[in-house]
Image 1 (cartoon, rainbow, N blue to C red):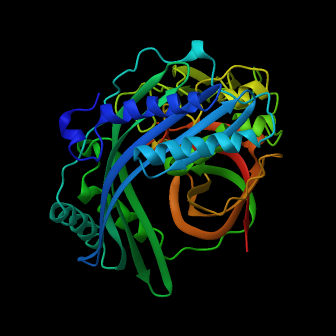
Image 2 (image 1 turned 30 degrees about the vertical axis):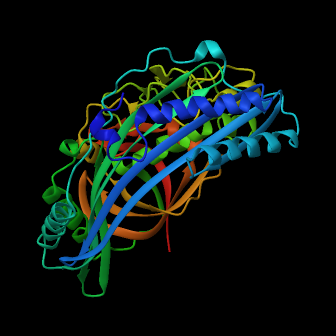
Length: 450
């Protein structure tokens, strides 16, 4: 439940939007809808950026909106509005109803099953407003950038540092009688700088994001890391085309997990556009890979007591010793597959990859000679076949020691092989989003150079 301090900063109080979400359902029912669901949301935010010690941008955002989905049997209509006046809400419901009457019947559409609705709206400690003035935010951004620029004389330019704050709340209701909502916040500090040496010019960045400002990395540390990352990339060399082990640093390892999750998500599965079709209960990865979904982590960046359909979220193990234990489904995709929703309408919740025993230095030592990847370019993943080919930059490693930076290379393989050839997962876990994972070492990939 939102407190009065939260309500005073918004156009509508939390209790008001809860009531409004229920009221639009009543309008839909009067217009003949057999079922309906609505969500109202409010958000405010502030972002400041500096560059070379000067304030560059000060931005504010204040957003509000309502979306309504109505069902007339197996016909569906959807409409949305950013005007929350009573008349605008009614007009939007009417628009959704009119749309539904002209859409084709779809036997799989409709609300999630009533018995799956969340009955206990857990307080997951997601709301921590950062009441920071513009001047204070500018000072933090300047401190962050100054720390980056002071790392090395070869850092000659900056793309800037920024400090952002955001908070809001929402209410979701459906005609099963479910109504739920809660406030949340998210803040961030980031920095990007450019280093030069001779003809070599490199940029790199670092950032931190959290529900509470107290959980952010210190501005000086964010700047220092950004500076160090830029400088270490100077004077890169070419390498010969070869096959070798590849170590994805933690910031990029989460991308491998994202690709896996996309492949076991409902849309990809029922469209048969996944390299992991019919993989439930099968070995899809190395026995070292264990992935847990933890939707109820306090202050988690992807925590939620219920999904976008009001379905209660539950902790579970998605991958156990490399064996796929479950898919990632909302109710529509679940029905298409003849299964039940997993409470993932709107996406996955906090995914925790069980770390191994090695720290980053230990992973380098275990790899011996190979490629450490710190940047990936382009998409280059065929979700149907699993073929993987992406531009990359990073460092060549020999005998567990970083020798020199490399760029203008391509790494290639197949996701089915890559997942099964994971030989180590680091304990250098990075928390910057919905996936928490350490660096991942792949036994062998093709590394192509110009």
